[in-house]
Image (cartoon, rainbow, N blue to C red; front, side):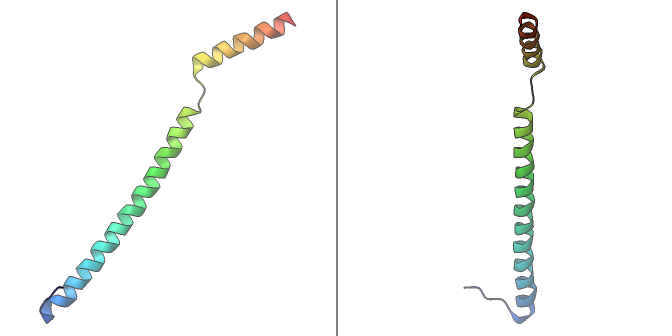
Length: 67
């Protein structure tokens, strides 16, 4: 239970509403940020390692030369 005088009641309720709106916007922002980081991690994990690519090219060239 809360009690505020008539002068403070309105501004207090506005402040509570504003705080909730700010908290929701922060949660939304951090969700977007989390999604972007997750996508970047996936992109990085699926990039070819230059050494692995060179080895694969050697294998393909060797196979092509032998055929």
